[in-house]
Image 1: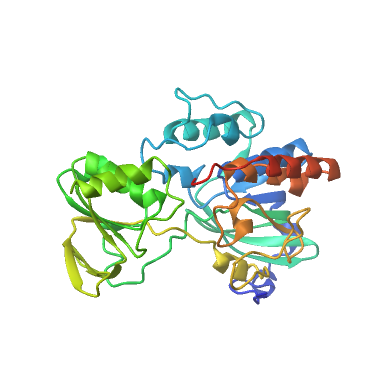
Image 2: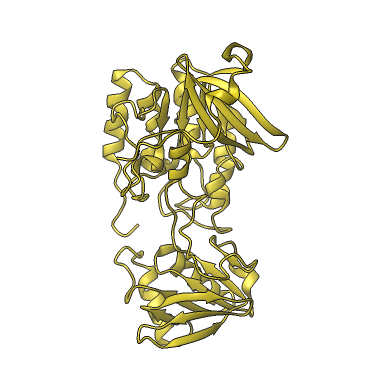
Length: 361
C-alpha cells in the first residue's frame, strides 16, 4: 500500500488564511460527469448542497467521445436522479447524453463550476482546505467533505515514443470525416481503436491499424470484430498485429513488425487509442493511500471514505487500473453510499450488484 506524503500546497502555505476566513462548502464534488452529478443529487436529497467543480465542461468525458457516437447501453441505465433520458433510437447518442446531463444539472439546480481544477488539499480542524486553479487564477475554499469523481479519461496511456506529442497525433478519436483522403494510422486493438479504424475507412481514409497483440482481444464487440477482419481480408484496412511503435514523425509511423523487421507507414494523422488509467498523482497530492500495483485507493467499502478522513471517492476511480469494472450504470449509485443513511447504502449496493454489462462491452 502506497502512503504518499502530501506534496504541493501544505498547511504552512495557508497559515495566513484561517479556516474561518475561507469560503466554506459543506461538500465539494470533484468531477461534473454523470457520476459526479449523481453524487450531487444524492447529497441534495440528503440535506447537503454541494459545490461541483470540473477541470473541463459538464460531462467532459462524453464531450471527448467521437461526434455522433452511440452508447452501447440503453437509456435507462444512464439515468441519474430518476430523470428519464429520452433518445430517438434504442440507444442514446453522444449528443443526446450531453443534452440530458445539462438538463439534469439545470433541473436539479446543481451548483457547478466548470474549468476549475483541484490542485491540492490539506486536512485541518476537521475540514479540508482546497487549492483550486481557475481561469481567473488560484482560489481557496474549505469544506467538510470532498468527493473525487474524476474518472480516468484525462489520463491516456502514453506510448512514450519520440513524436507522440506532434500536433497530428491524438489520444482521442474525434470525427472520421476530418480524415477523408488521408493516410491514417490507428494504434491500439481494443473497441475504440477497431471502431475508429472502421469509421475512418468508411469516411474515405487509407487506414492502418497497429496493435502489439498478435490477435484482437476477446473483449472486442461481437459485431465489430468480424467487420474489421473482413475489411482486412479484402485489403480495405491494413493491419499490423504483434507490432510495436518505435517513433512518429510528421509524415510517418515507424514500427517493428512481429517478424522483427522495421517498417515505415505513411501517416497524415495518428490516433493513439491505447486506453486510460487512474490519476494516481492526484492520490499522492492528497496523501490518499493506494495500492502501488492496482492503483486502487484504500477505502471504507460502506461509505467510500479514503484513508484521509473527509475525502471520498466515487465511480471508476475506485477501481484503479481496472477501469472497466465501474461505469455510469453502476457508479451512479455511489452518491447514496457517501451521503445516505444505512438503508440508502444498502439500496445503493443492491442497485450496484444488479447491473451487469454484456460480455465484450
